[in-house]
Length: 208
Image (cartoon, rainbow, N blue to C red; front, side):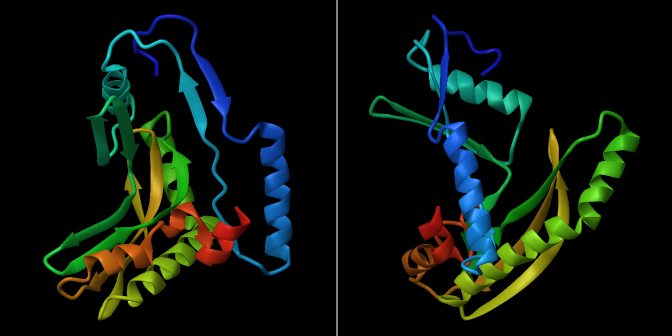
């Protein structure tokens, strides 16, 4: 929230404290070794609170985020005294003219300080066996979710590299033909996105 004005001292807290988070990682590794799952996205939430200096504090945070780390999928809501600001490079679902599209991301590397270093980093990500393995697992999970509702499914892109303000990311693209009137059924079949849970999805969600 650098560049955003507020009164008083800010406070930060984690939803899962660091020691518990480390224990959870050990548990997940154990579950993977036992064959219960093969990829899990264990996230933590950092909560920030302070006395806001204006009723549109969230908008100030969002505007500043857009300046320092712009992302293609961003939005801000202010409704019934609640503010939501989000910014993400990842497309979960797009539906247009009967075609559903998802662009899951797995694989990230920072931008270089120089054009030469930036190119080296981009190439490292492109050739990373680990990141390709994670990416193809999630792309296959998304393909499987799509196939539950769509009449046909394609993986249009696999291991593509997209560059943003602070990072390069490995992105795949899955599309499917979706029949008329099946949007609600489709969202239920695909939510939440596999890149935010792991694979297989249901078992991974039970573990985390």
